[in-house]
Image (cartoon, rainbow over all chains, first blue to last red; front, top):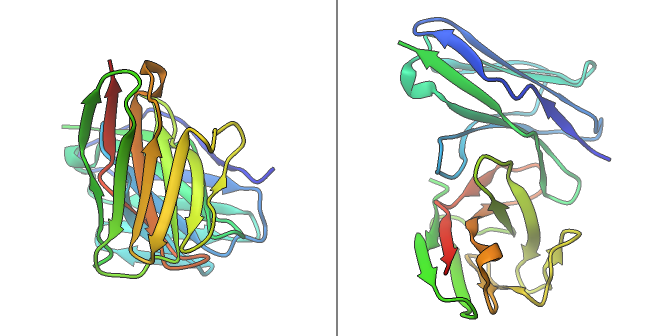
Length: 110
Length: 115
């Protein structure tokens, strides 16, 4: 069964620190990976997607993909209390669907 | 870009009522639309996948006669919860995608409460 695994957390970091969120996946056929942010009571919001090995940066966010290790990560620099949310990692499925992890809850303390 | 509109945001109704939820992609054509359900403090659960003009594919354990999905065009999909009961109360979220390996863009969700 295709799976995406994430540590459920909570991950607690002080304001201004780097938050590191990690994810592993089982399906070697997945070509695309996505990070979503979900605030409590809201729907998921796409933050970043990555298709190639290496790093992809967008503002304070950096996504990293290592297909050999089947590992995806999201770094959030200069973390803010407003970054406190659940972060969902997802891998592309062969049917056009996404395989979601259960999410990591991030708490940024002022 | 990539805006998905979902209506209504909130529904409160009596047991036995049927409820229709609309999901529209406003600025792109969605090859595939997805319907999820999320209970409080739990993970997203995929209910069904629908492609325009085709029958929806339901996940195991989801009753297709209870959760009717219509995907009439590349920009509109509807989910009808038929004869809803209190146990159907949940947060229903749709998403839309332009193709395989493409991101899914989510609507704002519909909070359904059945009394």
